[in-house]
Image (tube, rainbow, N blue to C red; front, side):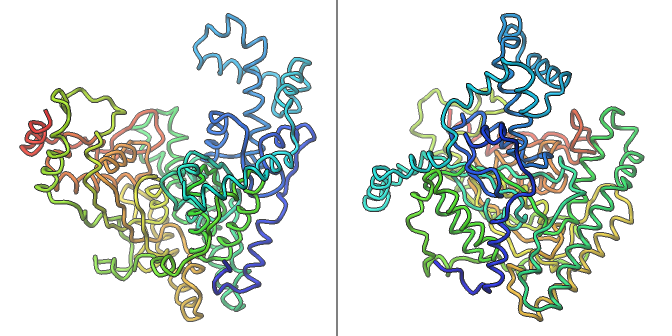
Length: 592
């Protein structure tokens, strides 16, 4: 399929972005390690193969807080691989070492690396013959990336896949296949498009809370705009937003404000990290959507084609170039064999759209600062839910009971998946990025525009930052009007705006999924705005279904001071627990 209505020069710019070599290199020894399990060492996009799942999980988990200037491959050779190999050395496989608690043993290993300054793979291997031997053992298998490509693309494999996936339609073959890849230095917008496909896909993206982004960079989308005056306005707005973010991150004024305001309530040893986390959360609203980020992805072979199609349906030069680069790189591990039907059909085009923000204006936006708001839950009536749950439980064994003591990680039983609905609300794009991570839910949003207003933090904050938020929204509105006059496509407009602008959204799922979301995102360590939205979600579900407060694991503490403390510190006393209601008693009688 050809890109639809994209200027040739814009697409060429995006393709050159992902084709460019990374601005760093690796030593000969590091290249040996990388060549064993990564499809390349010099591009922004690469697939991961042949590593055990636990090692892949440990590596990609660092994307949430990655500080290594050479990306995840740099982290792998500088930190993860030396630490893993050290665990197989004589010193740390002795009876004495293995008798230690795993946490203590790893701490000893980290101490050993620090004391001996083993800050890279080269230094690790040069430390001793044993360590060099451990690395050699790791690299015993071929490091020729072409070998893996030949292996994955053998005629026998291609014939089998084309017959069973295409001719016979046996998608079950593609379902257990997992493709793992990384995208580094793509815009937040492109990465959110990448993360749209679910289920059968998982994502770990760079977090603005854990990583100092005062050196953040942006995708130069202005090079994809034909009109020079608009080029200038878009570039100026993006750089102004980024400059404000970097200024406030560097001067520490917000952290100082938080420390002075809450010092008497937070342990001194936790104050620095707590205020830093809150500042990152709040200042993240000033970042432009063009800000570069990185993400690790695992997706099933069956869902890989949907992921590529979504990028193309979003129809920005960056998303098209990203989809093409992913297809090309996937050939090295045979991933392209799961992409037999990438044509965008008329049906898919006609059903591809974002929510209309005008619908959300009816909820009372005054185009000013406003708090996130959950509007309504559209689901099954309480009476119908009771009937469905009672029917679903009727054929269960007689000794089944919801009265059994429930552990903190016990999800609701399967019959709660029979009741579905969706929420409709407004929140910042910055916060929506967090909500959107929940894999089995269905997500829709409006385009990112300044029309619905800007996020308002409802805990103590300095007036100068409130004014900065308002100024950001006003600047975005000015540029927005200019871009509309210039007939710029809405998907390109989004790059220029701050993440703190509000979007309308839908969040759909069944009751079991909603209960899991409420449990996960009501914890004290969650971003304040996201937590408030989830508490609204919880309150609405409780008003619909009397049994919800008995079964949901939601933490209903109204507000926590900070998200990064050893334990949650409430800003005000928690609300009293809600007592059981008759519907919940009725439900249990039916299920017992």
